Image 1 (cartoon, rainbow, N blue to C red):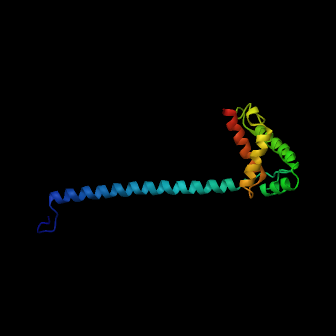
Image 2: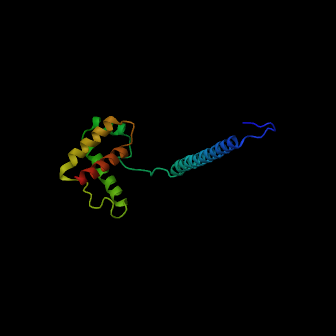
Image 3: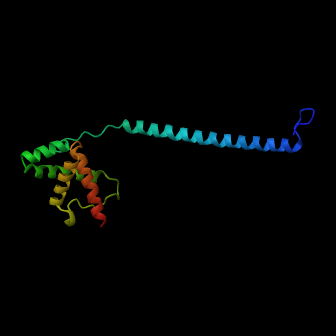
Length: 152
C-alpha cells in the first residue's frame, strides 16, 4: 500500500509495473492489428481501382447483345438461334486461343457429351434467367460449363 511518504510498497510497485508492461504490450499488438488492417483495406481499395482502369473489351457481331435481345430475336425468328450459336462458338474459340499455354489445352468446344443442341439449350436457359446480362456472359458461362464437361 502507500507508506507515509506517498511511495508504493514493493509488492504494489511490482504489480503496477506488471500491469503497465501488459497494457503496453496490448496497445502495441492492437497498433499492429490496426496498421495491418489499414494496409489491407488500402490495398483492396487500390486493387479495385486498378481493375476499374481496364475497360471491358469491345465485343462486336451478332452476339454483342443483351440476353433480352437474344430472347426477343429468338421469339420473333427461331432460326436465328443457329446464328447466335455460331457466334458463340467463334467467341469461345477466341477465348480458347487467348488462354496461356497449357490452360484448357485440348478443350473440346463440341464434346459428344454436351453437343451443340445442349449448348443452345444452355444459352436459352441462361438468357431466360438473366435477361439483363450480356449474351457474351451467357457464352462465358457456357465455356465454363464445357471446361467442367472436359474434366469428366
